[in-house]
Amino acid sequence: MPTSPSEYAADQPQADQVWDVAVVGAGPAGVAAAGGAVRREGRVVVLDAEQRPGGQYWRQGPDGVGRHHHDRRVWQDEMSLLRDYVETGLVDHRQSHRVWRVEPPRDGAPGVVHAVRSLPGGPDVAVTVRARSIVLASGAHDRVLPFPGWDLPGVVTAGAAQALLKEHGVVVGSRVVVSGTGPFLLPVATGLAAEGARVVALCEASDGRGWLGRPRALLGMPSKLLEGAGFAAALARHRVRPRLRTAVVAAHGTERVESVDVARLASDWSVVPGSVRRVECDALAVGWGFLPRLDLAVAAGCATTPGPGGVPVLVVDDTFATSVPGIWAAGEMTGVGGALLAVEEGQAAGMHAAAAATGEGRLVTAPASKRLRRLRAFAAAMHAAHPVRDGWQTWLTDDTLVCRCEEVPVAALTGAVDDLGATDARTAKLLSRCGMGWCQGRMCGEAVSRIVSARTGCDAASSAARLCTDLAGTANRPVAAPVTLGLLAAEPPSP
Ligand SMILES: Cc1cc2nc3c(=O)[nH]c(=O)nc-3n(C[C@H](O)[C@H](O)[C@H](O)COP(=O)(O)OP(=O)(O)OC[C@H]3O[C@@H](n4cnc5c(N)ncnc54)[C@H](O)[C@@H]3O)c2cc1C
Image 1 (cartoon, rainbow, N blue to C red):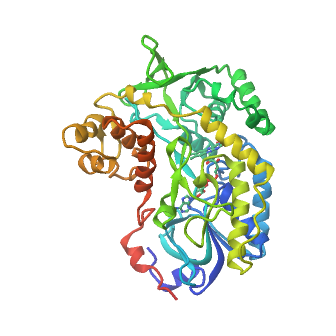
Image 2: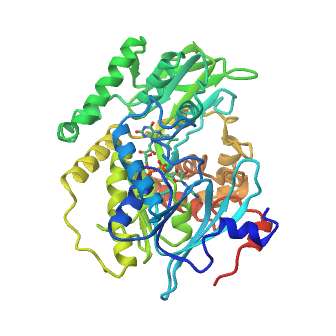
Image 3: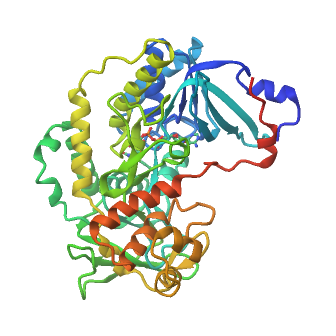
């Protein structure tokens, strides 16, 4: 905790300083937004929770962006621009700043971004930033589905396996199984194999045919095709054969994962009888895609809408303005679509946010560029080719944990519906404690919503509508990141 006024003075932007644009997040979208804002004469502050910029895609180790990164040139260009802007004082770039609340600009008063600066070994410090426009670019997190044994040590999300590798050079195991759906499994499997892990199985739950119906989306992005060919070559080099329509449906072990059950899936993802095979391993990386990280935006009042797969994304217009005046959003928050799409959106959002702040008013919006349209078409094709089917629920047993934080098994959740009369996810949560723990439903929220919908007999359309409402509800928390009462009390007063 800060102890003296001078400590605040060193860390606070001047208390009365009002920036044109505050950007939350220094991933592909946030860094591009800062660049876009500067190009429109905006003075910008960027806050990001991690020690180094890059976000998920360009996650850096202490030595910078490593060899498992693609599109490095784009990142290097964006970062070199950012460094120039920082040197010339146009951008104040702050890493290790965890934003816990955003207040939109209102009645002519600037918006306020509340953060905690946490440096290793140092005291946490409350930081408050004021800005006429705010760009939210807080990205996404792993989409998680429960299955028997998923709480064993050695079972990680695909994103975690990738983050450990990119940031720390740590390989999660020596015999690794990679399972889930979506193209993200490919860099995870090839990255692990390149660092010496034996990828003993690579299981893709979809059948891949979804891509065949969308040749234009594929042909419109030759760089993605090349990237895919590179992954295919790397998998062949490491003797990893992807198995389509298969998934890990259970993990086994005592102290940690020792083996997994790999099953062939029917079209609804239920297990094809007689197809389960035991595979020995010491780590399992599972990835079902990503969920936009919406808590700051939802708490600030930004409207959401069902995105691909029914999960909520932010409503934005063609300038990337959200439904709340003074707040723009870019990147995965508007729909998961990859780093290059995040960069395009970030640049546009930053420009529009700066134009509004510097009095240029609303910029004339050009129709979405050809590149933006192609990137969006590719993202739409990716989601259509890798849907999550409801049959994963047939993999669960009564004692499978749904909520790991509060250790709530499936039987307690279904009991809340069958025995206690819950008819919606919120009531089931109150009766079972699912989602009330440390992660606040970020991990189990989707599973709880889907299981309750299935148990209460919802049809596909209403369970999809419920999923969006439930997840947006879960994201709606006044404090998005942990902050101590001491820091709250120590926040500098408004000027
Ligand atoms: C775990 C994970 C791994 C991924 N790895 C890959 C990959 O290898 N290849 C690939 O093609 N795509 C990957 N993706 C998809 C990827 O997120 C993108 O396509 C791209 O990084 C999106 O850019 P973004 O700027 O929208 O979000 P992100 O890259 O997620 O950046 C968001 C930034 O916001 C910051 N932030 C979030 N909340 C706060 C807060 N409250 N306060 C301050 N800062 C905050 C984060 O620290 C982060 O730096 C990954 C996604 C995840 C979740």
